[in-house]
Image 1 (cartoon, rainbow, N blue to C red):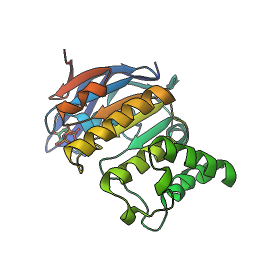
Image 2: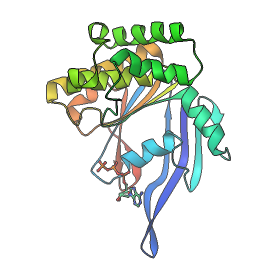
Image 3: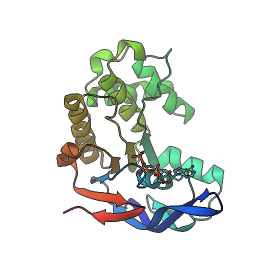
Length: 224
Ligand SMILES: Nc1ncnc2c1ncn2[C@@H]1O[C@H](COP(=O)(O)OP(=O)(O)OP(=O)(O)O)[C@@H](O)[C@H]1O
């Protein structure tokens, strides 16, 4: 599998005790597959993504990304693994206001040492893939909310990651635009072969998923 969480437990300090945000959670996602994670507020969905993204180290259990065991790795090695192997899409687009859509993507690649021409070609190809070829020269304020979210999805794919983690990408969108973004994530998962985990509140969006799991009080349950 491209993403493997095994018996992951994560706790946070909570007064004199600790709150268990993830309770022996195991989840494996293969390349080309989309797993949707639903569940009530506070059930541990964002914690699950943070652990999968190697941004938070669990108290117990293991996280393997693209066949690489992350246990015991230092910050530098984890940052390098994230840049190479993990694409992350947050709830809010987090775009740089002064850059055009194509530049938002190019920055990622240039940071990674790709040649400027190679970065531009890949950025244009990805903007085309998310339906924004005509908007490549626009800045964030000249884009709709859905278009901004598409730019962040394209940006997350710049380094051709094996793992794509997406946190509530539709929370700022109306239902129709939200559904279109989820469909796009499903299509890109299959076309680009990412192991994708999508946190969503909206159960109407689950048709694009190969599998749906539900978090409840830090535990993961299969949804029939
Ligand atoms: N940094 C933190 N310190 C202490 N407790 C935290 C921290 N982050 C999250 N928690 C707690 O851990 C539990 C799981 O939170 P998490 O953010 O993973 O839930 P969620 O399912 O993503 O919720 P939502 O749908 O509201 O975003 C909650 O009880 C939350 O209050």
